[in-house]
Length: 395
Image (cartoon, rainbow, N blue to C red; front, side, top):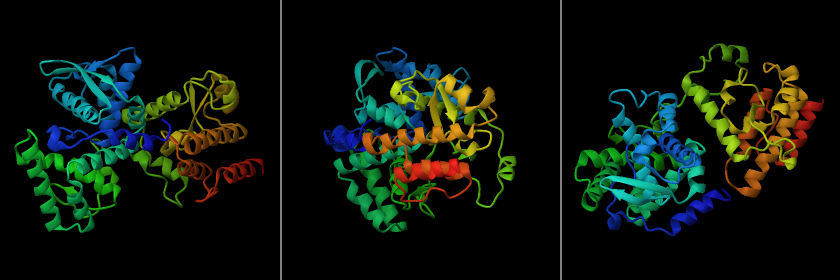
């Protein structure tokens, strides 16, 4: 995943995604929201990791991975439920068609309407699978590429320069007429539904107006408006001045969705670090325990944040991180060890690999929440952060 944004742009630089040439009206669709696209990338990778060299949409629909995503993340009925198959088909097939047009996967066999696919670009799929924010970043790059190659980008840019009812109506009509003229989609209803999936991610990226209920939005598009499933309560931090005990009392019990999100985050940490402990990592100790540096029961809003999760061995977990193997207690001295080791991982990700898996700013936010003080400030470098942490814990 080295220099992943550069890798994505280089990938698209080699392609021509002009819709006037391809006639592909399904380069994006209604279910191609960041959370669905990210989850489908993960489902594909997990299916391949189980030893399958290729896959069909039916394979994904019937996989345990997709069933888990639909039930636990999106709170939908299981595939075995009567009437669920149609929704599963859309959630599986629409992102797959997007991935194929982006040439992250390709068709190797086609029988009637059924296609068999193989992965072409695993590193970009891994980036997308990392989370919905990364999927959104990919979608913005992808959509800009498609619009640029198709001669549509100037129309969108003109709208963003002066977003009002007239410019919105002009853009919407121009886009829908373009899609009807150059793709098999021949109705306004369908083209208008897809229009929002194109406009709104780009609008959010520019802190600009988009579309809501078919009209110009009354305010700039918010992050939460882009998703298939509502973002859960964990995304809200404790208000300043509110005692943590009061905040925790108002925090709901974990639902299947929250539990799934935490387990998904842990899975990504294990995959990223290739099953090796982040503490004493130069000895390459095999590790399978993902530990919350600031404990989940005290800091539920940090429970699925990568920068608060560290991969360690069973011994490190139960002998050092938790005194006497009591998972309700945290060793403060080992918490410092974990924070410094996590900072090493983040420094490597941000400055050497440039893969955007971790964020230094997010680590600083985690520490400030965990210590309940503004210890780390914007503009601090890694060396100063190390010094501040050591000073805070040793004093």
